[in-house]
Amino acid sequence: MGNIATTIQCSVNEPSKAQKRFNTLSKGLKRDKELLQKWMETHSQLKMELADKLIPLAQEIDALKLNSLVLLDKCYENKALTERQREKLHTFIQYLADICLNFDDSGVAEEIHDRYNEVSMAEINKATEDAMKSELEDLFGVDLGEEFDFSSESAYEDFMGAVNEKKEQESASRKTKKGRKKHAPPKVKKKSDNEIMESKSIKEVFRQLTKVLHPDREMDEEKRAKKSELMQRANQAYKNNDIFTLLELQFEIEQIEQKELNNLAHDKILAYNRMLQRQRKKIKEEIEMLKHRISHEMEIPPFYRTPEEAFFYLNREVLNMKASKSRLSEDLETFSDIKSLKRWLNAMKKSDMPVRREEQGIIDAIMEDIFEF
Image: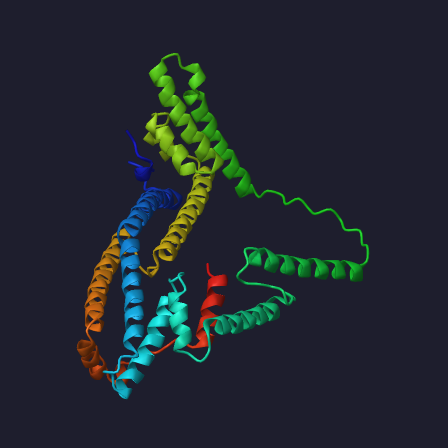
């Protein structure tokens, strides 16, 4: 049985440029479809890996960080610590509290944070929200009002309402300035010869398929079920202007033979080529969109090229997280003994001290989340 990915040939004459292009596009489209299917399967598998491996590991790591923070907070007032050791511990507690604030909803991290900082988290959040509100108002030219609350469930709806109200006011203002002018009805875009040929070609192939595949004309139950399945594929392909699948179906049911495809009119081959080219572009875009979705959901870089590379990165991330969990467990054991803690603090050089995030960095991160793809 023929395959549309190895189609137009000519045993006597050299294939034309359009025929060669058809062959290239159909083979490429077949590869692209297979790759899209592979990425879709990869997406599902990666989500399972995320749920089964990464999320549990991340939760265990977060618990170890919070336990370390609580333990270090208790150790801070220990009289065995020198002033220099306490200074180092103070800085490290500030840093660890900042990290734990990202995942701790119990209030423990915030309470410890406020004891080791001159400015409380409530004050930081208020300043951050005020700055963010001001940036949004400047960016979109809206007034969100004094009562606007980022933490409320209706924050997004309130913001979009203000933006839409601003647009409506600007639109009404433009209409008032222009006055009531009668506008000519929009011109209906006339279809080009190419568009007419493409529409005619795909309809022709679809009609040929429906003549053979319509299940109502089949008396045998098994054959009717098969035709019904093929007809569904044909209907979906026709709906999506998927000429590739329609031609594949014709080969599958042996409705056309190789010689018929070889002898297609030049303008019809060109029409097929244009549709195949658009299909390839659409599928490539779907692949890229799926890769970005995987990157966003899995929090992994989008620069991997193949599903295998995505799995490699995920497996490497699992190994890294296991190593982090092991180190945190060792640190927690170290912090449990005051003598070990003192040695750990003495070994910490100034260059080893962690750097805390600046407030402006927090604002930038929030703004990135709002306008994230």
